[in-house]
Length: 432
Image (cartoon, rainbow, N blue to C red):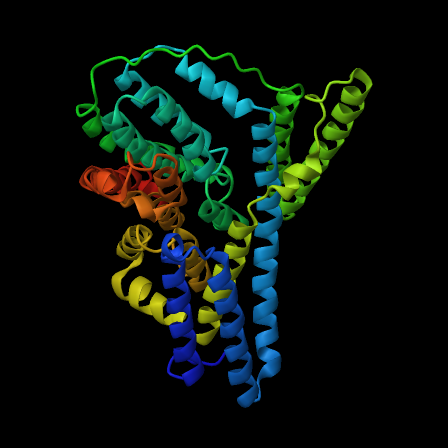
């Protein structure tokens, strides 16, 4: 590959990437969906790469690099398509509404609700994504804390930290962990070495924030909500789909995306059976249109992933990721580099950071790959804008949970970040 870090094409590509990422950061201000600037940036960067290689007489050499990035994105896309479809179906069957109603009706104190919602967010995020988890538990916090803005603000900080931490110890908890698993850096079970460090990441700030919570008890709200027919079947099939993806990867050496697509077949057959039964009984609630749930997939997010992965992949072809790897991983060493990359995810989205590290592919021990998985997963909790969970909750709890209300507790979140790294280095010392 050519080193184009000082070439006009390389410098222009960096400028294009920076401008596109600034547009992503300003999404709320410009009202331009985040996928649009990165899609344009990705296309322009690869066009510049193509021109530079053509001028050097090496056009054939760059084709393989582009094909490899397409393959990596294709696996990620198919995996996420199925996972998001299942989450949409669970929402359509009112599973999350039932959970919310039961938690609201329990009549717990603010402090008890703080711990319960945080712990549930931590556990659910390992199966769902951190964004969905934060929104589900955020609805509970808003429902019970309607008369206590202080409770909402503090509980939302806890939810962001818990959702991000819970996603770090599972291949299904975050896009970054999914990428690490698909690249074969860690096996499915190896991720669970991060369970305790991830838990520490949430427990430390949660224990500190506990004393700032109201000691009172909100009035219990009795709301009767029932799930639609077939909801239990969807939950079982979702678990079976995850098991199928793991089996394809671990036992058949096949991409887990194939297992996920097989699981989409499970859902399609189940929706067909529900459709027959619902039509026969005249029960509209029983009818499940699985294609409608596929159509509800957040395409802006999936296209954003495409743009980011291709743009960062292009910077790698130009030679910038190799340069960054030399400065960080060779110059500073893996541990400091991983800690710095994790902290950067509070400002820069963790997906391009993790993809960049995977593209650099530095020589690291099993313990260090766990380290970057942990730091890149939980580092975004340092700021409310550092993760999709934080951004979504700021919109959901507008006025009560803000950038400044999160920043007030960033020092406590930072203590949890440091404590989780320390816990990992002590508990998993043999892996370094």
